[in-house]
Length: 391
Image 1: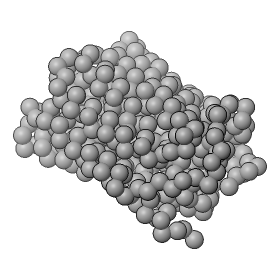
Image 2: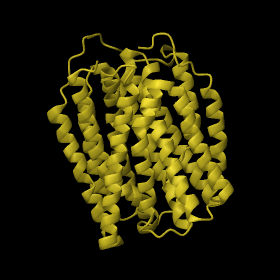
Image 3: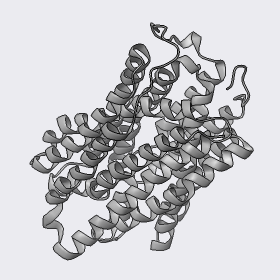
Image 4: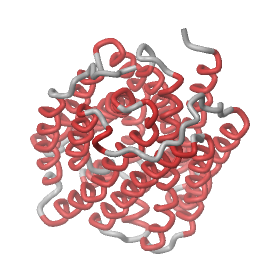
């Protein structure tokens, strides 16, 4: 039976995640338009900036996970992470050329120092029977916050026009500040029963199934480029700038609705099965772009629905799976390292996608992604879902 204190912890984290993504997704739908349109960058530059951001995410999560396990503290990384995200949005608003974005992008994505320690807490207060549900709830609230943020952007743009884009960035800083206060005031960090000092974890200390999951996730991430490419594709297909955020809204609503059901489903039928489903959704997305050539708006909308289904299935289940395969004493380090590898792969992923887009054609990144997705799916079949020592 779930303890009341555990339920409170999950709910506070869910609310803080909602607020942070509310702020983030005020700007995410207009981010590629801001970088390429307002600041005049190319698609290759957009891919570089997005990929750099994900690489910073990976490093920040690995460092925070390792240090968190080492000092046996989690909370400080979580509220500091939200604070970094809030401050970066102010910097975006003040940027006048794309090069100015780089330090603020680093600050923004460094805010992900919160993720591994927070995920470790969630894994620790959960059981095998509800871990998928709890990670699913967190992702559902993330995506619900995204829905509110996107709706805010659509309403503001429709009323005031594109000239308020910079003000939207300033507005986006506020919700994350509230999230900082929630963590500081309502999350009480308990002293761990195990006071042993952990010196660090080595790759050979990890279960072989964890290593295989890490490998196939990295292969998949190499082809899983930034959402910015889908938004720019929609713009090139004829959607007006004011409608592009609506497509992102469709994605966010679908992801919000299905994150928790997919998390619960993984509690019942297994993490591996749901991960295969998530890869299948992404593969269908790539095939849709390649075969249909996005010739009508209905097919583009369908692609964003598939994107939402993919994210709704992937994100909560992948984290729950990795948390279960990781050594309990090194959960934050393992989850941080897991996200580090995926994030480091994201830099060449988006950069390669941008180069393929500019030099070969808009469908070229999707061909590469489809092939890598097939390889990752085959490898996933060999992951043992019940390794020795699973808690």
